[in-house]
Each structure stands twice: as structure tokens, then as C-alpha cells.
Image (cartoon, rainbow, N blue to C red; front, side):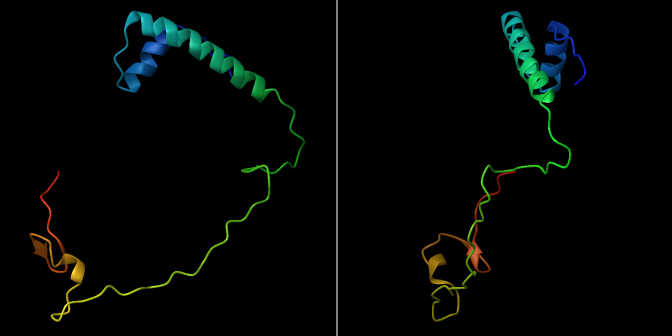
Length: 102
């Protein structure tokens, strides 16, 4: 990993990119925390990994059992529309009508 000098200017730049407003005290605090964190990253980068080692996403070989999807039809009214929309105050086609949010 490249040697990155962590200073208040860098912390302010990162905060600006993240659209964060930091106080001077927070900048000093995060500057120190960033130095410690990048020190850990440097330590990890120095670990010797044997050539040909495949990435490991989980320490154990685990497979998640999957099941087949089953379609369960919704109960319908006499007019063919789903019963679940019957008590809705307002509907559109065969769904709930809700106020726009955007």
C-alpha cells in the first residue's frame, strides 16, 4: 500500500467528498483514527499469502440449501380481482393506489 500522509487537509477533503460538515475537533479526532486504521491496513497488506491461494469468502465450505419456488394463487372475488384489495380505499387495476412520494 502506498504511504499516505494523513493530515487534517486529507480528512477535510474526504469529509467534503462525503458531504459531511466536521468541526475542527472532529477533524483532529478523525485524523488520528484514520492514521490508526491505515496502520492496520498496512499490517494486513504485509501478510504473506502463498501463490495460488484462492479468495475465501467464508472460513468453512458452506452451501445454502435452496428450495423450489411455489406459486400460491391469491384468493379472488367473484369479479376475479384479488380479495386482499377489497378493503382498500382506492385501487388501480389490481393493486393498491397510494399517494406519490417523489
